[in-house]
Amino acid sequence: MKPKSLVVAGVMSGTSADGVDVALCRIAPQTVKGETPRLKLLGAAGFSYPKSLRSAVLSAMDAKAISVAEMSRLNWRLGEVYANAVESAAQQFGVKVGLVGCHGQTIYHQGAPSKYLGGEVRCTWQIGEASVIADKLQVPVVSDFRPADLAAGGQGAPLVPMLDFVLFRSQKTSRVLQNLGGIANMTAIPAGARISDVQAFDSGPSNMVIDACMTQLFAKPFDRNGTMAKRGTVIRQVVERLLREPYFSAPPPKSCGREEFGEAFVERFIALCRKAHASEADIIATATALTAESVLDAYRRFVWPHLGQKAPMARAVEYVVAGGGAKNATLMGMLRDGLEPLGVRVRATDEFGIPAQAKEAAAFALFAWLTWNGLPGNVPSATGARREVILGKVTRG
Image (tube, rainbow, N blue to C red; front, top):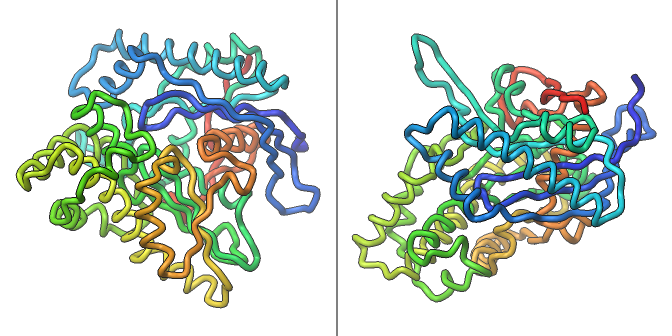
């Protein structure tokens, strides 16, 4: 079947569990054989989870045990929420959606193998019932994107590098695409890169630890504009101690989530700060610095050598930031202070026509289009998979 132009709704709800982002994209095949498809963002909208739903999602993520009945109900309720979000966005921008790509809500992700019942198991689980979305909208839905990459030996993450390659590659400029969601992940695209030259991985926590600390200490879901972090003083010995932990120095490919930086990590982090006599504002400043320093360390340790090896004659490096953390002025200031002395120019995805909050949702619109047309969507050099695979499962409307 020859690929066709479609309006695709990408739906993303990240590890911060703050709500749903919908990106409405027109995706068309490239006119030049062998080139990547063309993607145009038609509109983007965000929808916050109701407080009770966010609480249920966070509880499911960090739960030691949860009833099967509750998990099933949450799966179906999220399907309704996603369907309503797509319907509202389509009405807002006056477009008719022909296909939906829904990432779902990650409840558990384990990219590295561990022993279980006599075998080595890697696994991932995203919920949000696709049949509910397909029935309400009467269009096909592609969902559950990560398992195919895991089955092929990959970590199931990061997947967004395919979108990064489609939208941001350049012949003369090396670019690093930094997403600051719950987890911080980066994609390095050397100047003149082929898809096999792309490097991508999760560097560690982004908003996840900051948000959890804000919730515990101030009963607020996040540090708006980094205001609280700006008031505090960074406890350097805590940041330095945590950066010595194995995940940060482990080479790519690698991925992480709440399993590494969730509730247990946050409790330990706060305890370390308290031991150093930190105020509550100091704790938020230190959490923000942990995000910034882990990103900068990953850039210096892994990305800078990769760019130099793959594009030694590149004239410039641009650092393009997306995700909710891009709105945190204190975090962005820390990143600029670390990157600009290295000759790196920091930019926002908005400058390229993709609002920071819409980027991941747009990625899953692209994956849905690729899957619908029988095309692979993973980047093996990023996930560690043995081969390219078609991602996701199709539910027909």
